[in-house]
Image 1 (cartoon, rainbow, N blue to C red):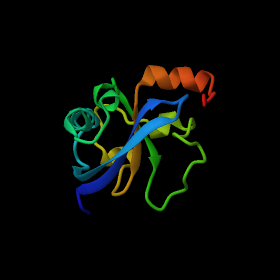
Image 2: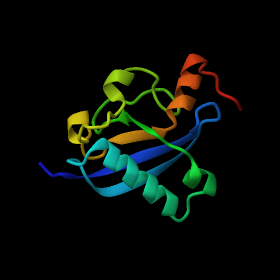
Image 3: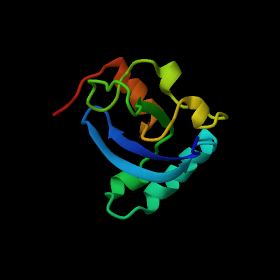
Image 4: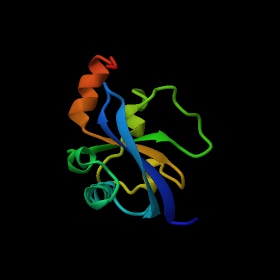
Length: 125
């Protein structure tokens, strides 16, 4: 089984405004720890050309699996509000043991924003 994968990380700046940008990462080592991957993505995003500055400077701190290759997709526009205990990545585990495989799609967001939105899931137009 390959330890390198292509992952899509959806940078979520606002749940209410459905403000997100997908970033594709190639050659991701699935044996690295969650906290190392989060640090890698933060660094990649801060230096990536073509991303608007608000996305580069945002204080992301949590990742959650949105979709796995060949799995069912959610109807939620930004990400599902279900199964947090299963789908939110926990520090100390490696990506593979969190259920991440090639072509997994993840959301990267600020936990405080998510909890606020989850308590009152209203979108603003």
